[in-house]
Length: 477
Image (cartoon, rainbow, N blue to C red; front, side, top):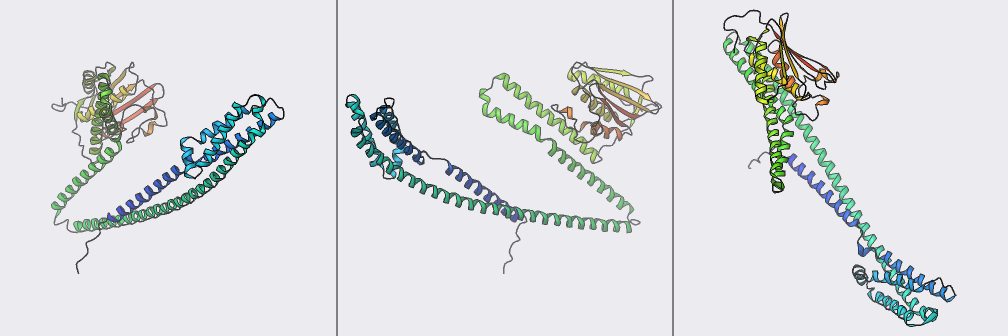
């Protein structure tokens, strides 16, 4: 016998999802059909029309009799006009088709003929004699009899139609309930499959950990023979772990942060594709600028995400040397002024000149992040002050802005990844800058602290080890 091929692991969940979707679609379709069926059709509202005609005929009969008894206030001609309008409504297209379908067209024609006879009797007879009951009553009686027969037939037809609709609704309700039960069963099956998959995953992880433990024990037992090989293997494992953590962190940050700019770019392009011919050149330029801003934001996200991922994977190794902290600050201010044209940066340096033991590139990255934050979150007409000094065995660089400040209860969380303050709403940012800056400071044996007062401003301080002596070749450009 031929061996049956193994069922793919994704086949059963896929079938369950398809069934769940089918049940849900069926339930929605049936509910839509019930909703459509519940709408009142003009042809099925005949009972009200016929009843109004009956009431008008009875009021005409009362007016004729009261006029005959001497009540001159009664106006049979007005009542005749009202009755005529009711019969004209019954003779309208949808209503006549309905009555014809019920076999009542002859009755309607008879009623219309009697109404015409009444009108001719009233209009052709002079004086009060035209309202004489003996002349009008035969026509009125015949007309009311026709209307009564029409009303009875219409009422029976609507009863039957209502019963049919109720049966249809009941049948649809039963099918919807069955679909809901199917949805529940499909969901339960999916939950069981998920629980089973989680259990298998945990079992595989336990097996993998046990296998790794056995490998480590084996290496330890043979380490005295294979020391060099073991060290090489350990280094390879560290590199692999670092690479794995790098990609894992990068993927997590990309999935968390890239949605917004991608959505902006996608929606902007869709509007341009659909309505580009309606936009003026100025409007198109404005939308192009927005798209470029979104692309620039994604570029910043990529750079921040790569840096954060490299930090997670321990891929950043500082190249320490002796550098002038005031020189780094002046260089940064000059680059910022050339790039953005801003004149808001005010640099102040203490004496003696502060020399730091640091990685120049990493320090510039930290300060650039602090300066950009200060410029971004403070008013455009207020300066940003940068001061450098030496304090004991450390050198410091403080970046001070005069913006809205940060609430005291939020300040301890500002260095957490992806955290943004409540007053940062509406300002572009990733929530990575301060987290990355603190990591870069700490791998240089320094630190980053923050002090902020609401409505007054924020001061961020970078601490670095001081370089006590200057030797040839220590200072790097």
